[in-house]
Image 1 (cartoon, rainbow, N blue to C red):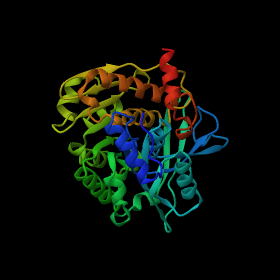
Image 2 (cartoon, one colour):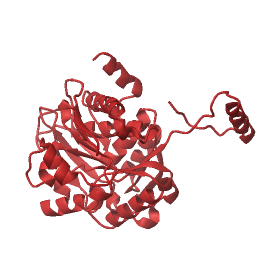
Image 3 (tube, one colour):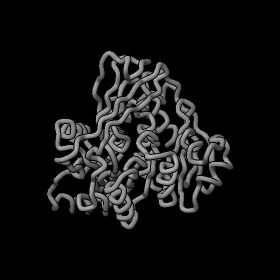
Image 4 (tube, rainbow, N blue to C red):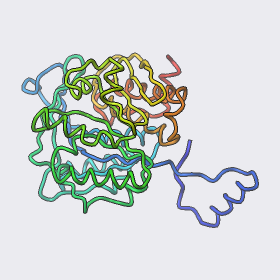
Length: 351
């Protein structure tokens, strides 16, 4: 397990190196950085499950936005992460920046818009813990991130650059997203793409399909759900390996992950494919489960970027990632529910 370099004296660092050359302890290395790009917003969640928005007696506010959730998930597991995105220069926006900081996520790439508000989403939790969304973004600050506002040095430091598809819906954020991806790729980052389909935000189904697929062949790692496979392939069977390999696996892809909720996940590489079951838990709220899963796999991939080449190591990392997702559904909210590495090892020990 790696840890951060402290602001130590350069002479001490040299001593560490000379110790290492004489067979002594290795110098401490910083954790490889995962930079998450996209939206961060406020979710308003009913205080009781199983009701419509209209029936909800009251709501609790919670930080949301898949890329931000992933960044917190990685930090919670002891990894190093940063978030790049835009919020309003309002109380909610500053609250979100604060939450990232408190969760040890580098928020120096965040920007604050004085003319647009932080995005809001009302999320209903049905009796089975599944969700329905109603968004308030017309436009919200996250859609207005400009290329000139990108923290280029932060992007260039990324071992992994992670993003979703919501930032592809509207300009200027779409062009900014494409530029950030190109910079990360040129700097040697692994590109990680979680589809995270939110159909109500797109102008039409066709626009969503085209927008999501427009950057498909650039990703090194893609995570997609069964429902998203059906949507992207125009109704094909998401459980059919041939559908996944022929329609979704592209020549440059290193790893394609299919999340199956409580059943675990499937994995596809150029060399092998398989399925890893999940830990069985009683769901309370599925919000953030997929993001915790992504955080789990990326935190391990950052430490070993060739993980996908070794099936035994990959399966072990996916058992860990599945446990991250499972633990998250046992609590309400996404960020508050993200597990620590110790909690993940504990639940796996009891399996």
